Image (cartoon, rainbow, N blue to C red):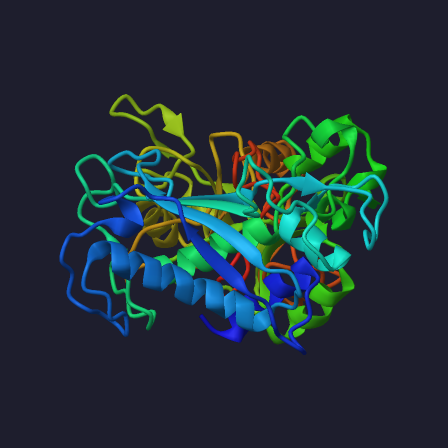
Length: 442
């Protein structure tokens, strides 16, 4: 893990990297012969000299903790109660890890905001001493961190496994050091305790919440009502981190260029719309491609019923030639849609989703025959544009180089707001539109 990938997370935590010095101690919470104590023989790998499964896990975990310790500043030891246990798992998905502050503190000497909840590690750092020494419920530990010991077993992402090397050379395995770095950031304070209803923990804000900014409302979460926060929770691509330290490092981390669909006319629907870009075909450019949106029509069945999903040959090719194809998501491959409208002379394809949700996801697939750009927009945006098509909707698909990927128009890093919300991921991560991928991307 490089400093480039940790810089934004460090800035959010509000801890300087100029004079690094913090001790992160791993407290092994596993029973004998399990987790960190698993005696299964293992071959040293990627700089990890452990000769048992448990030893390799502990070495990799401590290595990640030491990376944070080399970057953070705290005079108070940070104790991490860690274990490998069976977590939620299916054949297709798994909870890799779960980490959180064991306790929260407020109104201690050194607190920057009154009546505000702080995670233990950050509170101790600001107070300059341990606020919960020898707590019998926690043994004085600050953070609880659990990782999935079932990974790779039957019905738990079988076919993959943890990589315990320290060199990030994980190939098709899941790099434990990277995941631990991510999870420890949550325990250190990269997390809000506001739930999706907008309710605050015990009716007081948390320190993370003080810098969550909704660009539509023009307000911080601490100035909002629960109802407003609930709406902001799912306001995709319009929730930012307002901290000046983060904003200062964004230009040196995030790549320039945000893909968008800009509607020029009619005025009733004019504006910029977020898009999910296709992983096939040509990438969007700064120059962009402009044209009028025209619904693609095709035969839905042998009886000749008309559809607009471009899953068969286009029947209104003359109207589509030289225009942008407006296509409904359907049952066929996105690449098949693109090739059908391309054959009809379309210069680009805009796919309107058929399921509610935001932000729009990427268009997957691979086909070298696709030579036109393609994007996806949300169901709501699709319905809005569809209603205006008769008036002539003129649009531009482009990469806006004035806005960095994963940032808003003012250069603030976007937070991960989705509709519907994703418990455990929403808001407490940076947006996944950021390039390169960030340490705190969900």
